Length: 116
Image (cartoon, rainbow, N blue to C red; front, side, top):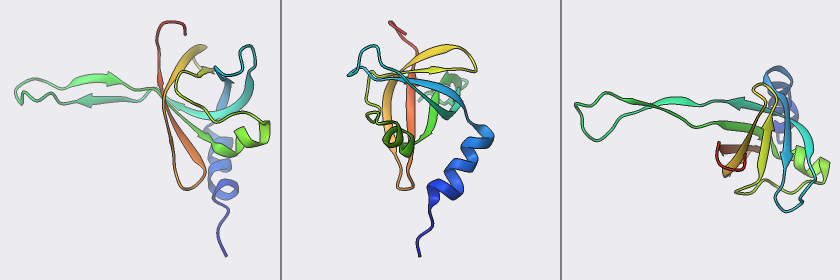
């Protein structure tokens, strides 16, 4: 009997760590969907090829969000250049890439850029 990963793992994580986010698909101008996701600024060190250089701290904001939320809301799956508004910092981010996993979660890589 398969485990309902969304109900038993993803949803409880969302309940504890999630925050309100607003999804704004580019294909539906003026339409937005209020959902919950787990946002992280994504700081990490990047070691340059020159071994003597100190690591550079880079930022890759990322949003973990359940794929089921889009289906339930009748929303399209996020695509490159769609936007998300994140409540914890009141910033709007543009979708850089969407990486689904086999358990029903989407890892959405975000950019801050022009038009956000």
